[in-house]
Structures are given as structure tokens and as C-alpha cells.
Image (cartoon, rainbow, N blue to C red):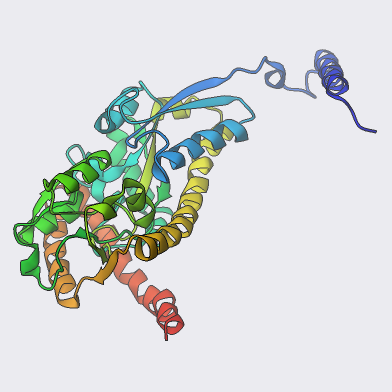
Length: 368
Ligand code: CA
């Protein structure tokens, strides 16, 4: 027998009435808490991405959607794109102060406040996406990240990873390090510092300004993310060569920070839902990027005539030396940054031994 909607609601009301009677008659068999009228916890999530931006913005939306669904409506998270409630770079302060309870961003944006922050997103020539997750969840990384954010009333969480990025868009071929000299390139973070040491002129620009700057000639070169996001911005219309690999961002971890007071005010089941929604999004985002990047790469090369190029080994070797200098100097500049880098560096050295005989050895075999 099937119930129509009215029967179903009637059945539910009956069940509630029975439960209430039981509760009145026998206090031990039902907790008064289960009978309280359902209160919805209203949270706001601010983000550093344009609203609904493919992969990153939609990843933030998914965190909210999963929390709302898994909590059965006990929580309602509303997402605000960059500039809607606060600007992209005000996200950290907004969540720290409790104006919003969640913030979806990238930790490297907060280097000015926390010198160790870039180690929790990506390090040039560092960990890949899956290795990064291993360090964070099973190598002590998340504990260090929590220590770094605690003074700001924030709890950090990994919440997405775009995988290995591309090396960027150029209008001339890069044959030696000298070809980077004087080049004005949009390349933020530690990668930008390395690029500067190589003689380039790094520029930090929000995503939305990349294409117009390439078209007007204000920029000579740019990196953004990978085929999926780069195709969406139309960068191929302003640059001929698409270089690999993304030595500067081998597996950038996105973050979702939580206001600590708001988090600890939640019952334990909702705390678990909030944290696990972020874990789910890490898996979903990595899968989405792999699926979308390969499609977009095909479109770029086959339909738009983009020329793929590899940075020569000699250029990569020199960039690697410069990267080590930049990272070691950052580690030496601050006590916590030093401890975080010591942990990540040791993990990187160990995991490389394993990755070389597992994934790398297999990838090589697959290409024979
Ligand atoms: Ca990038």
C-alpha cells in the first residue's frame, strides 16, 4: 500500500504524538532534547572566489549544500561570493571576528598574518594533491595548521584540491632561465617570489583581471589554475604557448576555516557533519578537476590550436634551486613556520621514496 502525502504527514503527526506520550509517562525512555522544536543554526560562508566560479566557487557551494542536507535542516549555511559580503582578502578577518562562521579560501592568501600559511596550500616543487592530504591527515600537518590558526579564533580544514596546476601561458618559448628575465607574469605566492629571483616581474592579480591584462599587453605571461579554469577565462585568445608542469603549485589545497566559538557551540553530531562535508568536497573537487581538465585540454589543443610546451629540465632544475632558497628563508623567518616546514620537508623526502616506486614508476610504465 502506498501512502499519499496527506496520509504520510498524518502518520508522522501520529508518531510524534505517541512519542510525546511516552516521554511524559517514562522520562528514562526519551530524552527531552529529542522533543524540543527543531532550531535551525543559521551560518554564513564567505569565500575568496567569484560566486559559483567553476570548481572553486562551486566547491564552496557543495560544502554548504552537504552541511544543510546531512544535518536534515538543522543547519542552514548561506554562501557569499567574493565582494558580496566582504572582499576576497577580508575573508580571514570576517570569520575570525565571527561576522561569518565559515570561510572558503586558500591559506597562501594569509601569509602577511601567518608566515607559515603558504605551507598549508602549496609549496613549489612540493607535495602533490594526494601527498598533501596524506601530510595533513596522517603526517601531523593538520595539527600544525590548527596551532597556526588558533590565535585567530579559527579552525582550519582542507576543503578541496585542484590537483597539479599548469605552468602558465606565454607568448614566447622558454628555452633558458634568461627567457624569464624582465617578463611580467601573473604568478602569486611563493612561486611568484621564485619567479622574481629568476629575474621575472611577478604580479598578483585576481582571476577576473587576468584575461584583460593579457589582451592589453599589461601582462606578458600568466598562470591561473589548469585547462578547466583557464579555458573558462579565454586566456588562450591572448597567449600561444601553454607550459607544463605547474612547478609552483603541484597540488594546492583549498581551505574552509570555521569560527571556533561557533563550532564548539554545535552538538558533536553537527560538528562531525561540518568537518566531514569538507572532506567530501576534497574528494569531489579532485575528481571534478581531473575529469574537466582532460576535456578542456582537448578543447584547447584540438579546437583552439594551443601549443603545449614543457619547461626544459635545465630551467626546472634552476627554478628548483631558487625555490629551496625562498622556502628555507621563509622557514627561518618565524618559529612556527620553521616547525611546519621541518615537518613538511621530512614528509616530502620520505613520501618521494614511496611515490617514486609506486605512482611514478607506474606512470612511466603506462607510457612505455
Ligand atoms: Ca595558480
